[in-house]
Amino acid sequence: MKKGTSQFIAILLMVVIAFICGFGGSVAGSWAMQNGYLDKYIGSAETAASEEVTPAVQPDSTQNKSAAEPITINVNGDMTVAEAVAEKVLPSVVGISTTFTYPSYYNSFFGWGGGSQSYDTTSVGTGVIVDERGYILTNSHVVNDGDVKSIKVSLYDGETAEAKVLYSNSTLDLAVIKIDGTERDLVAAELGDSDEVNIGAYAAAIGNPLGLAFERSMSQGIISGLNRAITVTNESTGAQITMEGLMQTDATINSGNSGGPLLNSKGQVIGINSAKASSGEGMGFAIPINGAKPIVQQIINTGSYNRPMIGITGIGLEDQSSYSSEQLEEYFGTTTGIYVYSITEGGGAEAADIEKGDIIMELNGTPVGTMNKLNTLLVQYDPGDTVTLTILRDGKEKKVDVTLTGDKTASLLPTEDAKEEPEPFEDYDFEDEGSDEDSHSEGGFGGQIPGSGEGRGQRP
Figure 1 (tube, rainbow, N blue to C red):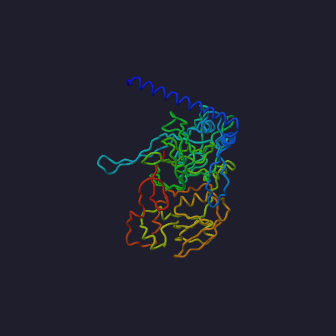
Figure 2 (tube, rainbow, N blue to C red):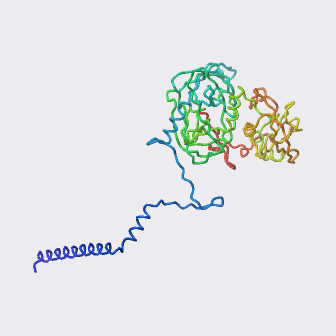
Figure 3 (tube, rainbow, N blue to C red):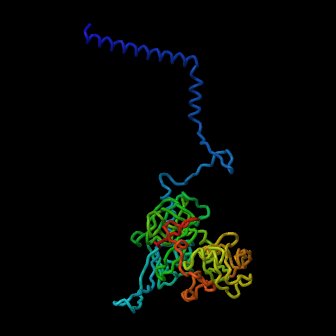
């Protein structure tokens, strides 16, 4: 048989076999359907496809075995979360242009002598309206810690308004300013609960990076960390301030963003943007809004803020850099806490028999290592409230109840005159007055986590 004839016969046989198999499968399928053999299988498959699938939840010790409730983001149509947040909050964000006198120091040509001169300069920051009557929350450094010649506020409708400073605190880096809200259609932002913020939560920042040419720019990211501590430098005075309890975010924050809101996915203000990493990218820091709420509310209600005070001047052992941790441990029995340098006459500390040289370790059970931490905790109370301090005296701990007093004018930072006072540890004759690098290493940046180094920040 020829080769071509063999191939033709083989192909023909394959076609015939395929036809027989297909016809037979069809006949068999029809016969099975007619006799009801496939009904139960097809029916069960259709039922399974129509049921909702409930994902398995691995319960921990605090959960039962029921499935967790789904998280729903309420946005309309094709609107994203970022768009919804922007639509809600942009009308509440303002630009703040400040004019103030800036001192400049210089040396002579030969390197000795020299002097100083002052000149007017301007800066731009951000604020957020917290009451439709014209109250605006921002950073203290945005308004030069209250020492300004003029403040102009740029509103969402394109208008500008003159503002005055009602409150400024350089340690907390918070300020409240006010414009005339009469006959203005101002929109107050909704304040959230910063205590409910978790790492990984959505975060958005709105501000005026690099000036008003890019006003109300928005960036988004997540909450990268909580309870961070950084050290920043006051550009006017050169003083270094340690800020604690900050929220860290990778939402972009640049120069001019200071004082702007950090927002959650509901468009609620959860923080006030205050600093960014001096090196590295995507590391911004915000003051939790819960620390500002009592201040804002009291100013709105009364026109001023009556700051609760213990009635001492002190220095945090963690703040000082003159003595090593070994020296502090030897003479005080601790390397953390607030060294009481003086007692304010008529204050709560005097009434509670707190003495110079005592070390304040805790306030109502919460450790305090720096004055900033102590003052941040005190913001949550009112004058007249009683708090329990744990103090260390002569190597022994004791608890003391202190009734807080009020002060509407006092600053949380020592004055320039106070900085000239003798070293607060002058009562102790340390053999080595040098510093131990390990006791106050500035280390890398990134915020302070228990056991890590201190971070260094930059005011945006």
